[in-house]
Length: 309
Image (cartoon, rainbow, N blue to C red):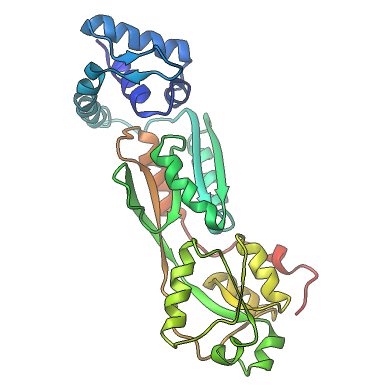
């Protein structure tokens, strides 16, 4: 048996299908299948049941998998000794939320592409209530990794802390004057504009409101931070924005921070990947993400071009 055969078996066993496994190894499906077949001949065992549309591990394959995992971990340690970082190739399919996409994602992609020009990057951006799909897709092997708020409770996933984003209560200058700038005075008559209840910020907002025993008369849910910012600028309600966005829009005279507001907890962000993903790709992306993550927007001109409250 060879290391390439073991890698082919391991990726095929831990990926959704042979095609994705082949992409991750930067080889063809036929080459992947041949390596697995050669390994089966070497071991004199059938490792995959190929009788159905999707190949599944046999009992022999299930027994072999944890041993191969340990061998590959040791091989990665040996391969990394005394040599420069590996140049990554193939396809990198990953997911982020809208806040990451509108802040640090372009810098991350530029840095990763410069270091690994042969790596094909396919980012997926999810917003609001769709963010839960990212964790599921990582766990099922459809995505190589994702960056999400809050640590998922799934033993198939490992999570590495990246950073935190703070938030601030804001409204338009007109609403600010109407309620003398105080959140409790505005809530009975104004809509609370926010991401859907399933979003990471929903719990933060509810905890903040509960601390002052506030009652919300009306709610307006939207799954896009960019649209929420526009709605707030237009004076259609009050709400919460990422603190760095709020600062820039307040400086532009488009929004005003509310007074009498309880503190808002910060939201922790994590890079998540499959627990059994041993490829250098994930570690490399984690290192670069840790270096560049910053939830300050590089340019929010698109939020207020031609708009005045």
